[in-house]
Length: 165
Length: 122
Image 1 (cartoon, rainbow over the protein chains, first blue to last red):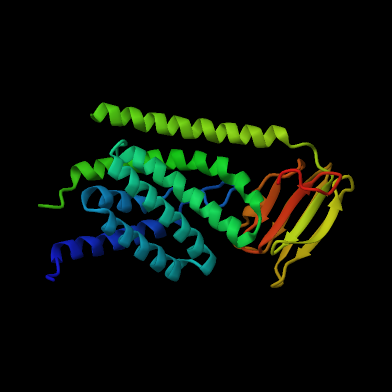
Image 2 (spheres, helix red, strand yellow):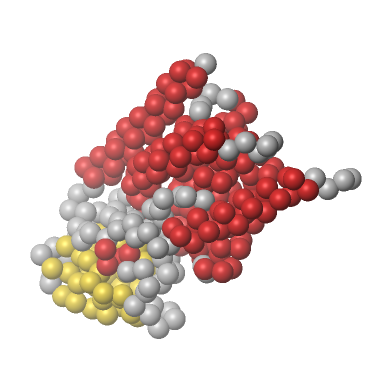
């Protein structure tokens, strides 16, 4: 099998960009009492790859980003939360892409909300406390808002950046 | 085609928002004023304090971390913690059954329960 150098390069740059976005995000204070509320800037990259390339590329970059970010800036617990969120998010966005019912903005909203839901599920498993589900409304709310913002920027990137050039 | 997808996006976003607000409303209004603040570490109950008595206690979790729980005017809150994110300190004071203050790094949960001691929420 011949290695596709162009694709390899794109995925490498994408991974680096996603990690930088994850890191930059830690400097943006989101002063809410509920853990797990964040902008989700790294989802820009996942969204972009999902639309421009394919699900496998987006999932691979997302997985590598989560693992490396946790290794460099996070902890075992933060890795478990991010991994659960990212896995559910990429699954939902992938399914939505197949159905083609939503634009990138809709996919981003669904991805953000499912990311937060995945984190809550992981927290329930790790903490053994179902009451954490009470955070779900707040996290769905923040997911819609951040998902819309990230989706809008993502849609812009999709229309402006041409990978074939 | 494009307008249809845009319309779907809006439907999805609004539906999620309505769902979140409805769920919040249900949680907010189905729970009565509680009687006890129950302390759980690692999923196991370690102490319970009546909400009627104003008090302050330092909760020491398994690995030596400290959270300070304060009960005042029938409401429980965490006023200080030695974790990096201090999310439990930012969480609002709780007084209704099923409400919680959760410190993820210390695996600590403060939960409000009713008079029977049975958790009406689950």
